[in-house]
Image 1 (spheres, one colour):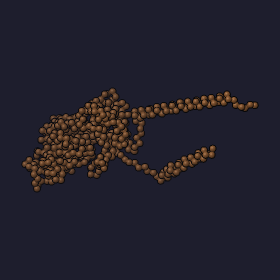
Image 2 (image 1 turned 60 degrees about the horizontal axis):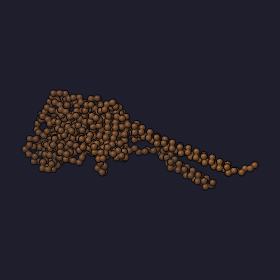
Image 3 (image 1 turned 180 degrees about the horizontal axis):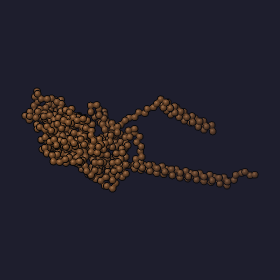
Image 4 (image 1 turned 135 degrees about the vertical axis):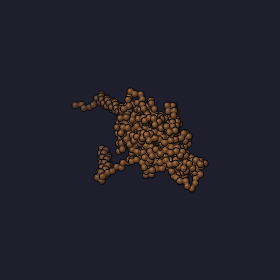
Length: 507
């Protein structure tokens, strides 16, 4: 039998082999292309739904980026059919400056993503660099002089509210009430309070009725100071006036202002103020330097732990040059009031010394905020009008010039809320001092209003503290990791490599 393979058969076999290679090569190319398309499609799909529905899992032990049920309800209550319930959060920066940030801005970016996703089209987050696109500030004309890069503006068609990034963080406070700073002078933050801030801002910009701040009239007070009213509007208040002797305090009033009254209040008026504070309202008091008698107000103030003396404060060293009555107070660091303030001096002309009486009602804490220096001295009003030269009998400072009294009460809905009374002097709040930007008065009063109004809307979200979690292992767990990952797995990989090498060498 002739087993010789003909040239034709060889050629035929080659054609078949070539055909199989072509077939398998084509199939491999098709499968590779399909796989690549599938991977791209899955990435696009997952990316879309991640942005849309926030699929990222918050693995932080403190649930740093988890949105509370209270905030979710606020977002759920936004009506998609109501134009005024559509929220725009404008970040005055390039998106990459937040997205790629490793610390503070990066955490804010993560939270804003979650708000946008939870909003389901009712919340839009946009990033606009005001340097590249200066026209963005056309919609915020009154912010031109204060807004800066990285600021965040929460707005609706009704109104808007601005934040700086540090507003979203809680600073560390030491045992003396001082804000702790890093080696570079920046604030040492220990918690995230962005949810409280953003949630409150959403309530503020969407509410049809804004909480009112009422200047009390009827005692020849100074009221409706333009610069003060501007600060009130920044702090979520609508300024108004009220005559307590003729009307009750409206239900939508959250803050009362007693500013330099020239006569005493009646018991009926004080009863209205007391009931207002018992229901979670707040009060600002700024007294005049004159020697008027106000026994009813004095008794009321003592219930909150303070007494305005009849002594006017002077300081020959820490004051405006040549004018010892224009005292420059020392600022006591107190949580958020001072953590973001510029390094400027406040001016407190013709201020009365404030004593702490320890006669306050239960659950009231009293904190001095501004004091005169150790070189200050005081004179009774009757002597002060005759001259300010220090004499041997004059009391010597330091003296309290501004004091904050706080009490935890229930608001109109029964929710826990602070009731604050801010005691100061007319020198802090007068028109000239607030207009002069080289003084700290305006910034300080604005920061105080922000602090006082923080829980005015009834939304109370605790700060989410930063905690460094150490990985704790039992002895057997450590031994298991050592033998498995350090010894066993590397040994198996080495042995497998040697076997493969030996087999190939012997072929």
